[in-house]
Figure 1 (cartoon, rainbow, N blue to C red):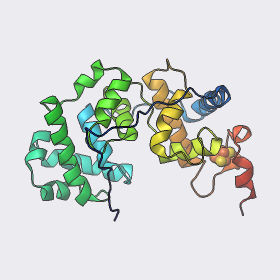
Figure 2 (cartoon, rainbow, N blue to C red):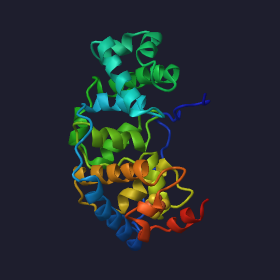
Figure 3 (cartoon, rainbow, N blue to C red):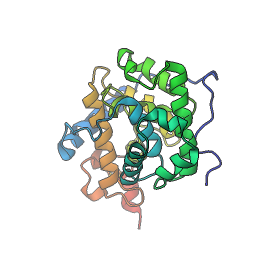
Length: 253
Ligand code: SF4
């Protein structure tokens, strides 16, 4: 079990701004070429896989940490079936929440975390409704979400992009991150969190929410289906001539 599943930064602690320097033009060209190659392969525009309100998407995102989609989806449904609304989750015993989400990884940590996040939202907004984020620009909406202790750029981007807000944010998951690293879009020491503003800056500033969602989905799907963690299938990859890691993979036994 990890010593800490979620970071413990407080809302008042100084936070590093997630703003990247302008992208290197050659790297930005490559990022756009990658998008143009992968879109026909995976079928852009890709249908949104969720239609949840933003607070529900936030809870869903917390459940999905290090957990397969099917299991976190089941846990989310069980949570909604067990409690009539999010207020009831705040009022519940942690053990009841934990029992409802038993199928996810680390339910004993996620149960109190979910309640803490709901309490934080209610304290800061006076209600359990994140619909107001639609009236903020993307940077302000991300900053609001990331000021909740433990929420990072991955969670804020997921809430804004995947929920019914449909805002232009670029989420980066572990598959997306691995493919971007192998392609040389980000350096080998850039972790998932700091990669968000770097990868976003490589794409056109005026891209729509659907464009950015597609970019995330096609890189994630490519990581799942071709650019595997252990043995990337470079022999059938449409990006092979753009990828500095292809030759390295070919030398592996
Ligand atoms: S060429 Fe190989 S390492 Fe590069 S993106 Fe394709 S599968 Fe991944």
